[in-house]
Image (tube, rainbow, N blue to C red):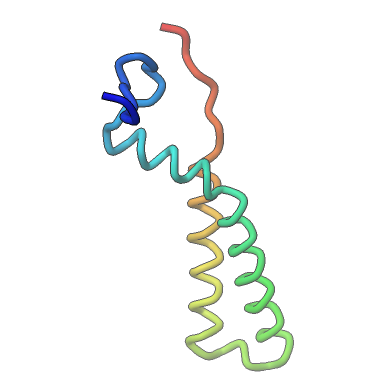
Length: 82
């Protein structure tokens, strides 16, 4: 069929859950790092302003950490030759 991608022609384009997730994490890696930076900066500013002990600051910190971890999990891994 025209317009459909045949994954048998390109083995790097697998359609299992793990491959799809890694592909999306690689695409969103820079955006997730930017989000982590912005959330971390907001948490830092709230802490410096003296309002660092409320639940929103904690939520900013947790969101920044999660975004950073997701960005790291989307890094390019070297391919193994099999």
